[in-house]
Image (cartoon, rainbow, N blue to C red; front, side, top):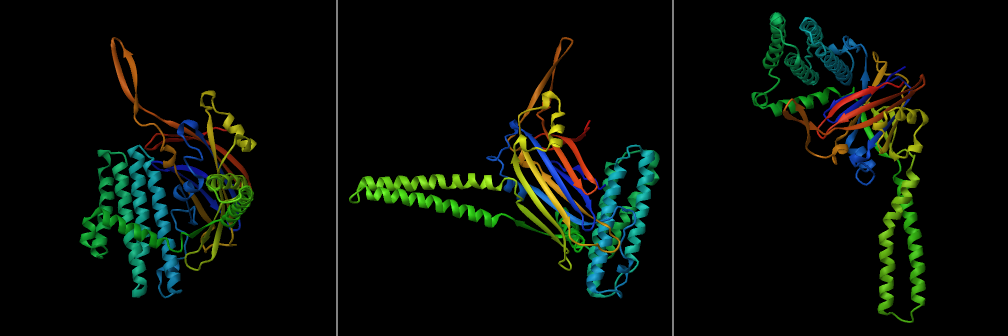
Length: 453
């Protein structure tokens, strides 16, 4: 069964990843239990505003075999296929190298013992060298294709150097492995020298960290062409919302006209009293129209899908994947039994009064097959929790302790806890998992997967 994983992304965000097969349907539900003291409610955090600003999704071709990119090898020859074929296959290969390198760097950094870390790092450098040589073995002579190759080659060389420098900076230090460390540093120097020899970047760009970083971000987006799908978001209830607004306005106007006609018939001529009464009637109309429209709209909209994401192939425009999305505040009685039972497993002191926020995503793959060499696509959802900490209290507290005759104090930060339940449904079955997210005003301190027992 395909499993959805939840991991921290940045300081105040997390991501959920899962894989999709051709013509597959999957459903993801997230139930946030937000303590009342966080100040999150429909008045302070509108669902639509949060969706557009803080929930992002990303979909691209995916291969589990990271060490050996599964793409057609004919990209190396500009004599086979059209220009778009060359660019697509080159991007597939380059993108897969980047994903493989990022995943392996992360795994290597988990090795804290130098005896394990340095051999693994050297092996990773050797594997990367083989992949880069394969990329560079066939440099296209056609000027129309050479720009695609240079962009990919420039970015991968820079990203490889940065990745291994990060690896050495964050990895364990040991004088016993100086030869291995020097080997890795020489590998980074060779990549830097390779870019200089090919004059990929001007000296002005190299001298400015911001310029070189932004240029590489641009090149990264270029190699994602044809691999990462284009997304179009559509609000599903626009016409229904217009209908509700128009209907409420028509009903209120009819009632107002009824009052106006009755008031007019009660006065023989236009007087100050009539003008004042008409002013009160129209004032009441303006006062209650928006509130009444909002109330009725919330009742009608409850439980209805709000958005649709359509993912298309950036080369041929073919539809790949369709997403239907929900986001709304719910009551406890709206929780499914399996979700409610997990929330009830919390310790008594953790069962605070909380506001419940529900996110749902239905994924349906439209195509029958993917590009050759790819059996899955990876769907990722990113949730930014910055709006959740907006109303948290600032500052730190003090913890006092007595040590003999001496009183000492320590600074302690205020932390808050969000309970999150992830429900993942596929044709193979359903998986439910509770997570405990601990955060302060500046970062997520910890994400812990809780036992379902």
